[in-house]
Each structure stands twice: as C-alpha cells, then as structure tokens.
Length: 115
Length: 112
Image (cartoon, rainbow over all chains, first blue to last red; front, side, top):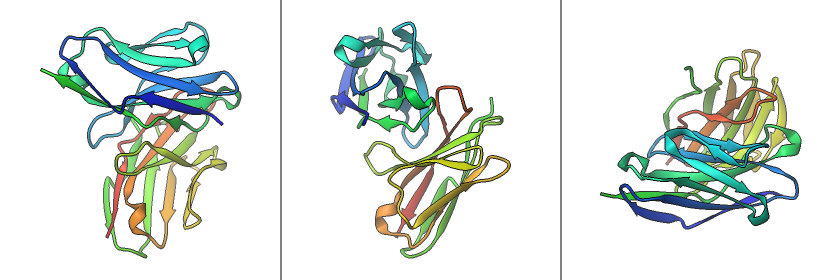
C-alpha cells in the first residue's frame, strides 16, 4: 500500500522567507507524486506533479518540488513566501502501474505567513 | 477554462434522510473520482468511474451509491444519513491516460 507522511501539521514563515514543506512517501513501485493546495472553504488545486523524467518539478505560484528516490522524499519549496500562500497543503501519491489512479493524501500542512 | 462543477455547494439534511450530490467533470474528461474530507482531515477516496463503469472503490459505506452517466456527469447518492457523514465531498475529474486530477469546489454536507 502506498502512503505519504507530511512532517509538520503547522508551519509558519515570515513573508519573503523560504517555504519548505516536507513530504515522504512509501511505495513498492515508482509512484506518481502530487502537491495540492486548499484555501479556506475551497477545493483542492493542483500545484505540481511528478511522474517520470526530471526530478525537479516546477509548479504554479512559484512553487517547486524535487523527487529524491534515495530519500523517498518530495518536499515542496518556494524561495520567497507571500501572504497569499497561506493555505493548507496536501502531498499525495498514486500508483504508477495503473496510470491515473486514486490519490492517497497526507494529513496536510497548514502554512501561515507572518507579516 | 472550464472547471469541475459540483452541486449543490451546501446541503443541510437531517439524520436518516437521503442526499444526492452531483458532479459535472471538465469537458472531455471521462474519469470521475469522489472523495470525502471530514473536518480537519485529509480527503479520503470513496469511489471512481471510468467511461461510465466503476473503476475502483474505497472506504465508501454501503449506504452510499454512485454512478456515472452517458454525459460523464456523476451522482453520489447517500441514504440513511448519519451525523458522521457531515463533511466536504469532492469530485475530481481527469482524462484517461493523462496524469493529474482536477478537483471541484466541493459540496459541504451538514447532517443535523
């Protein structure tokens, strides 16, 4: 079974500082990995995804993530935090073998931006 | 660009009542997923459909049923509602063979 673990249910950073949200995965086969963002009372928006190929993936809103197989990690970063980045972030995994398959989510990380 | 549409956005029902949630996928998308997100929790997969056939099933109670219609929209039917069914219900769609699910805004169901 696949799973993802998000370290830190709450992360606070100052505006302009580096954002680092951690995600580790567990999978017996090469996974597809995703980061989604959820603003209050809204749906989930796809930030970026990793399938195969380049391990550094760039997404929307200046976010990027690096797939590190040796560390089974897929951490999300942004060089400079903006107030509008305050939201809940979910890491998710699906099974590569079956293509676009159901997502298994982590427990989420709530990002707070300090002015 | 067109997004996933869910209706209604909010629904209040009493215990033991029934509810029907609707999902209209992005045009051309042939695959629909349903997820349930309880308060302060991560989304949990319920059920999925590909080309109008059930493709996978997760932790969906027997009281719930779903289907995908010829126009690819999907409906989640929930009967004998319980207080614990109060949650956000998300629908996501994608095109078979492509990676990445696109989520709707969700339906907030409150059972009183």
